[in-house]
Amino acid sequence: MRSSIPQESGPGECRREKPSRLQGVLPQGHRIRLGRLFGIPVEITPSWLLLSGLVLWSFWERYTVDFGHRGDGIGLLMAIVATVLLLLSVFLHELAHALMGRLRGLKLTSITLYLFGGATTASDPGNPADEFLFTVVGPLANLALALFFWGVTIAADHGGVAAMAQVTGEAAWLNLLLGAFNLFPAAPLDGGHLLEAVVWRITRDHPRATRVSAMAGAGLGGALIGIGVIELLMVKGGLFEGLWLGLIGYVLLEGAKAEKTRAWIEQVLQGKPAYTLLTEHAPPVTSDTSVGWLIGAEFQRHHVDAVPVEDHGHSVGIVLAQDALSVPADKRFDLTAGSVMRSLAALPHERVDASAIKVLQLLATNPLVVLEDPHGRVVGAVSQRQVGMVLDRMRYMGAQQSV
Ligand SMILES: [Zn+2]
Image (cartoon, rainbow, N blue to C red; front, side, top):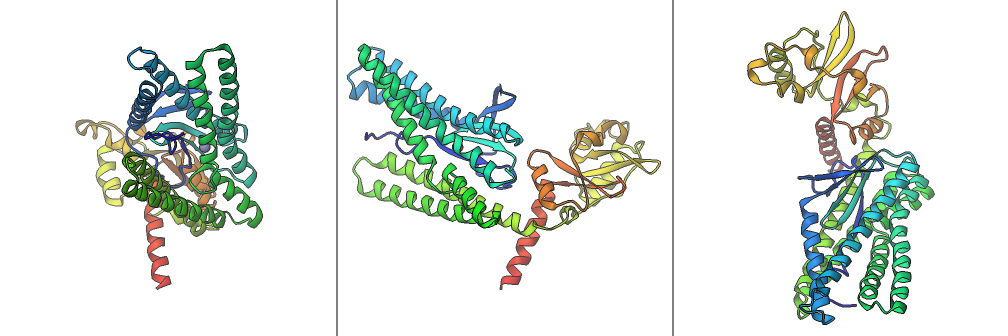
């Protein structure tokens, strides 16, 4: 099947986004929450609306021009059904990841649908088997859907419902493509994560496995950009397809880069204690301290994200900078730390000598992680911002050493 529409090269790239990859390429901008399914938030980005529009337009163009349904309304109806089936297929792929993730005990943050398909955000699988199972069900869902739609097409053909056979036949074909494309062994595609799981299982070296699949991802991304440019320049009417291929290549390249960074982070933090990540910490305050004083004397002077609250030598809570700063300026000296602090039970905590990687994993789904000394006294809190600073410093030191 050839067409000047983006069906063959996308949509449907599925990236398994892990939030601990600090530098994901999933758009961080505005997301619209559609609701929850099995307790998992389902979100779309505005770019998903663009995708839906593009897909609908391309199906409509095909059905009205190629199949002679011009002006009779059937072409538009077919295009709407075909679009819904394709977008539903992309969603079911993500849902398969999410449900398997739940089955394997991963913490699921969200399913996000965007311009290039979808992403399921989950905590890192702790072993190669979980990584493999969590990943493989996505493309398998598409292959199963391809079989299902193929069956429906045969039935519709027999029943003489040609328009329906046309639409479901296309859905079968597109699901086959979705499954096959995502199985390509290159991160951040699902196939890349399968490769990662296999290399991880063989070498027992996770950062190395991630690097291998990231390298394959960079290769695939580069190749797609190259093909896109050739198509753009050499193929008559290849403007749209060439641009689309190049764009997918670029997204893969960026994803592969993020994977490489993730491998590097895991490697440099391996064996390091959690307090490595604690760059700044402020002395504790008592719960009757005013919010105004806290902001001036603690948050602005120490540049911390949280200040522990202690009464009579016991930790009772922690005030987050964002909570203190959200108090209106004229009320800051009327409210106390005790009234804006968060209870320690509401935030994840770890001991200062716990593994830094464990803290990083907790930060993936929490704004910060509280660190305690062995006596249960709060020492401070680590935020993603602080981790970013620590990693920047490590990267700088690494660069110095390799000169
Ligand atoms: Zn997937």
